[in-house]
Image (cartoon, rainbow, N blue to C red; front, side, top):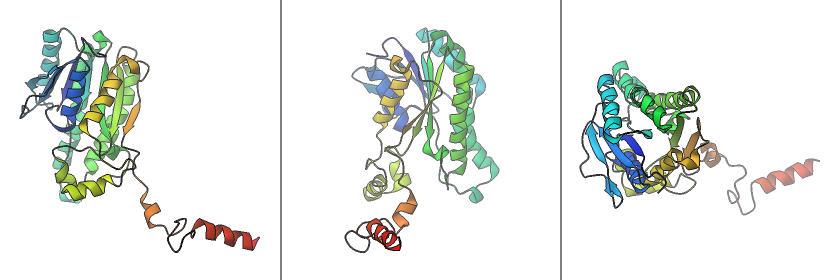
Length: 273
């Protein structure tokens, strides 16, 4: 398998996207260590193996450094770090004070920076790779989650700078995620009808699955991506259809009658010539 003999750490890997990433790494042959404040409700495992777990608060710099030193000592190496831990509640800017928004920035930007710095000497020794888990919220307006969007924008830029500073020993890339179906999907999109409706706005017609995110992360960590660094891989099912296309009345066949729209405009243009 393509990651045989390698050791990977997945932050926040106990559920959702992180668990999907961990399982994909296990199936690729890697030894996987998860860290989070709380253990998983059920072991993260596949027929290929079982992920280890060490409790860790990523906001505690000293604990983070000790964690990575212990992983490298116990397993003999560290080949990949996936900075997955993050998230945010829905909170309009005016409804939360600066301290609340600062905590979102801390979790989604400062914690990955802290983990990356602690992991760096071990990744450098193994000539390994680092994968940031970003979001389309960092590339477009993010109303209701503005601090999260700002953090993800910063994370992507941080990864590009790391890719330059830490080359050639460590490759650094970002997975830019769209909507992913997890255990918490209903909190964001509602019942199954709401989830289906939201999925219908995506060109591929559905939300991503955590396993698909994991497969992309494995690719970036593998030798198949040996010349990819400083890149942002979009994993969003084709993105979002621009809202103005749904609102416009021009160039919409069938809006008035079959063949209306652009054909009518073209005829008027010919008549004026």
